[in-house]
Amino acid sequence: SRPEQIAILPDLAAGCSMADMANQSNVQKCWEELAAIVDVESTVTPVTYINSAADLKAFCGQHDGIVCTSSNAKKILQWSFDKREKVLFFPDQHLGRNTGFDMGIPLDEMVLWDFKKPQGGLTVEQIQKAKIILWSGFCSVHQVFQPEHIDDFLQQYPETQVIAHPEASFEVCRKADYIGSTETILQIIRDAEPGTRWLVATELNLVNRLHEECKDQGKNVHFMSATVSMCSTMFRTDPQHLAWVLENLVAGHVVNQVAVQEPNATLARKALNNMLSVV
Image (cartoon, rainbow, N blue to C red; front, side):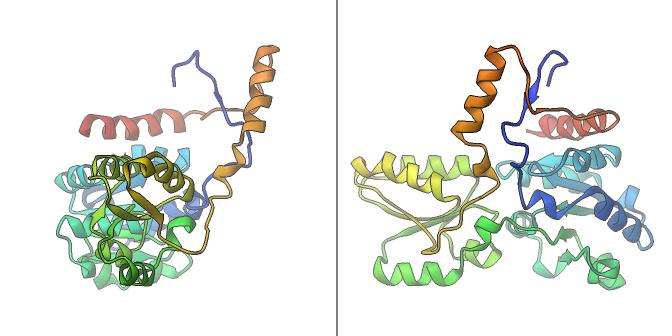
């Protein structure tokens, strides 16, 4: 943001459970353990998903790394591999694995780093062979989708086209007809022929809005899981909290201001600017 801009979080308890699965101390410990095996500064590019804490973006900036989104992850990984031979990808293992596989990287060259175990639970040989070291984080909403959901639905509606967000598991994405970011999901279904049926693996409210938008065109849009999985932290930012913030602003009071302090602000901006230079 610009110096004169103020950022406000209507409910300070709102956040992201996936982002909370990777913190600066655990990532720093991982980096140090990797450094005992490989020359991290010359061989490993740290890449963080946009859904991460500011200090992890700063970590990437400090080590000449980068930030990615679900829509640009492939371009970001290619940029990273052009610089160095390995990537440390956090916090979402599924986005990293699905993107890497679509780029032609074999599964056995993408290893899962369990920060609760010494050396991530990996052998020296696994680390040396790996192209992508995946953090053991995930989105709890997308974790609920299972390949069996697709199989069961296709038995009833075999003409269905399946589309999944890359935060869904590898097994779900392999069964999908399309894999894409929220923007891609919206575009593909909006551009689809009338009368088509879609099974969608992403956040429930988005699927419901898309269903309402498309039903007059004869399109059927379905949420993949019979089990409703809501993002409880995201839903903390509700109309009531927003109204409270706006009422205070009208009265001349700034509430729940959030800010990133130095040196994290400068370092995080470097990682974000690296991303913007690529896309």
